Length: 110
Image (tube, rainbow, N blue to C red; front, side):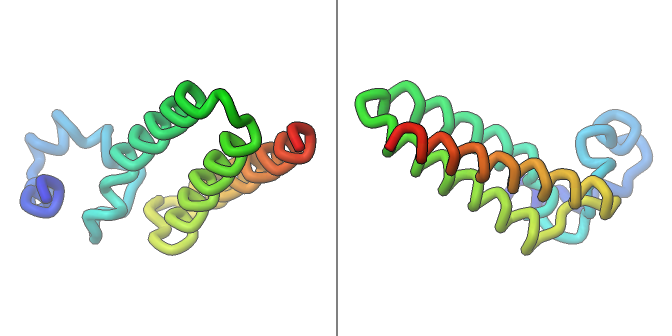
């Protein structure tokens, strides 16, 4: 909501000088694209919560981590938040590798 309300400020030159480095690599046509860092931070928080509070079931931890990685992968594929397609591809690649690593971890734990 905060991002959507203040999206008009993104083109303001003084605002851009002060805060532009936060969103310069992202498309500004959608609030969901601009919310990348918020979603990224939330994802890290969920990873931490899962790893700390679900320590009694390693397999469940792996499943949660795969679901989180897949959700981020879908976000990058559906919303394509990056201005530069190379950045989007690299993000897609790293999330795919993360999913693969979590799957291998699941096989090891199982």
